[in-house]
Image (tube, rainbow, N blue to C red; front, side):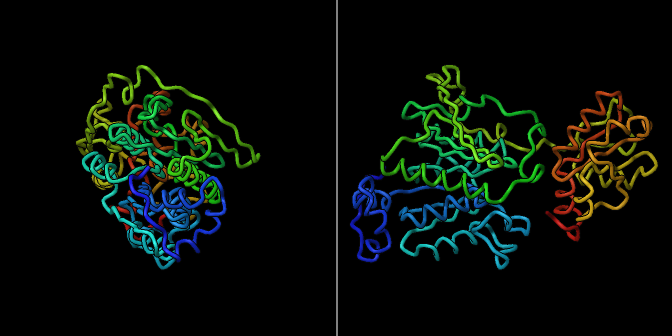
Length: 391
């Protein structure tokens, strides 16, 4: 995909000899890899294997975009990092590992991550975008930016024991992410791996497939996953695929698309915090509260509030908020006659997904004073109590 094909040094000829033996790649294909520029978004579970294999393959310029820092719970699956990386910016840890893997390539760090403000400028510097993110706002942002920039987007996702891979490429007639998923699900309806868990080795499978798709796009070999969603079932060791077409009404890639620019408000994963009085009438109770507002409310009106932790017992054993009542989500229906209807129920979990569903369920059962604690105990640990263990 790159314009120039640089000559390979003797060291490169030796390093990439197994590629050179492949008639489908050979010297010309390896030169294409050396000239290619690939951006990996997310130095996490998917980005780790994808970036490692792209670096090892000799992709000449490899960008890594991530604003997060390395935490202990990352190490189960994010193989770019180790114990010595804890607390470091992920891009710094990732870049150091990738340069060790292949000192002959150029690694570019984007520590600010990808935002609506910088996406188009960053994408313009690369030939291919590899999406290793795990939230819906970022996936829609990456898709819309790639479509506007005319760049193929190699998509991967993981959930528990299942993974998905495809290539979105409207510039070459293929569908985009919005053709497959026109609108994001309601907040909290689909948990991420921090809510549902994920088997670590699954990341290796899906991330490696993403790297392989990028290599195929660069060298022009084989058949890519444009217009096909590859689905992997790790528990039953099965692959299947789903063909899908470009939508003529797609907001991102239709002939007259609704999305012609990137607006931050369209990709924000958080809502503005509500103003919370210390004593609320039922009509004034918001659906969600920030952890700071929750803490203030608990302190100001302890007799009128009840903090409920809907995580599993093994999670509560890792960390808990003092005074919280542990009631696992699955037990909520049988507790309807016990839960006090005259108190303001504050529901929290790990990141806020399960607790939001519990909040909506309780409201559907006639509880008028119930709110979800946005961000859950993880946000509480980050913003209010750093002594709490994070997982």
